[in-house]
Image 1 (tube, helix red, strand yellow):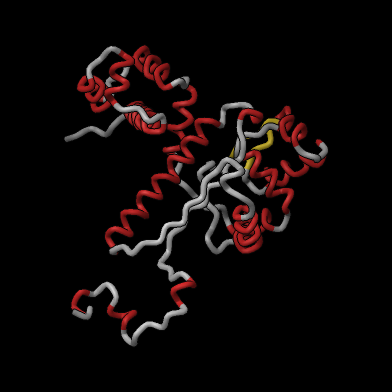
Image 2 (tube, rainbow, N blue to C red; image 1 turned 45 degrees about the vertical axis):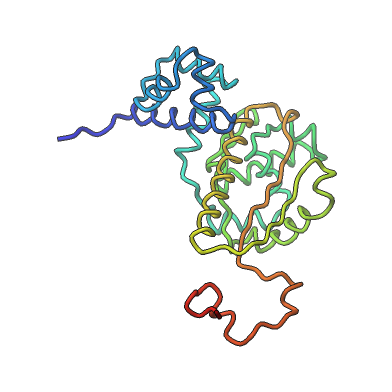
Length: 267
């Protein structure tokens, strides 16, 4: 009869997984880490595989990654929190009040009340009133001293057809696409190629991974003061699509159906 893993074993697994994610985020390999710790690559692999990390070794690895143990535990906690959706009622309340939605976004990104007052044109009584509404909605817990504790995971997702996307979705996307990406220090790529269904599915999985790493890095940086962070927008989307320049050429009858089916292609 096999015994169930203990709670401490489960927590160790989360910590090891978090370290692996941080290694990838830092662009480091097991070999790089081994060289930094004066260990072989095989030894590093065994440490991670067996989850045999002493506190001293854990601190040494954190030092190589330029993070502290607290940050690693934050990443581990974010992994254990399943991405969840807000309720319809919560989304509707946020969608109906742009200032409430704005304060919720800031709190979700670890902004504290003094930071909000310092950076934005809003008075403290209004901020506290908005936080009280968020508390009533079950999104945060407003604590003494104007401190805030989130009641939802930072990895929560908006409903695709929910009130927030319906009310603000098109405007937010339009705002994001305005202006010169490169001049703002960003990047923009639009790729159009023909893919098989397996390749398309693979690309979608890879993009999901990019989004996951984006959120992991944000979780890692959330401990930094707000003046050392800035909002970065990342839009990821794929869909079967015909460019308007091509749709001006009329397809032959049945070509749409036969596309991708070797048996129906013309020789």
